[in-house]
Image (tube, rainbow, N blue to C red; front, side):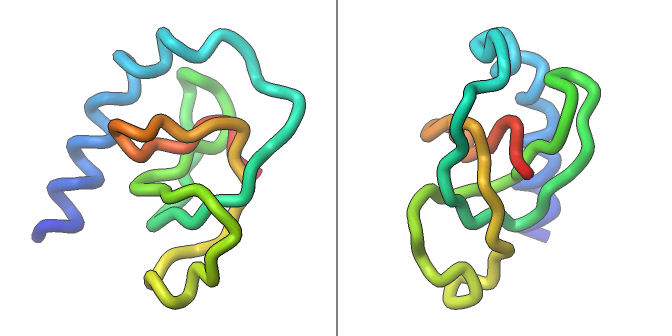
Length: 81
């Protein structure tokens, strides 16, 4: 239930935090996310509950991805691959 509520909260916050993201950055940074989903605004893939760094994501029960930026407050990754 806690995971479901954190995903719902992150998805609800996307429109507000997307205003801070102007364009896709040129480089991406390694990240570990709970889930990566297709979004309309910003368009592309968005990571939910992400942590940045070169950690072994399986230790945290997360998937490995690469995101253009991660909001450290909401833990939402933007422009993921």
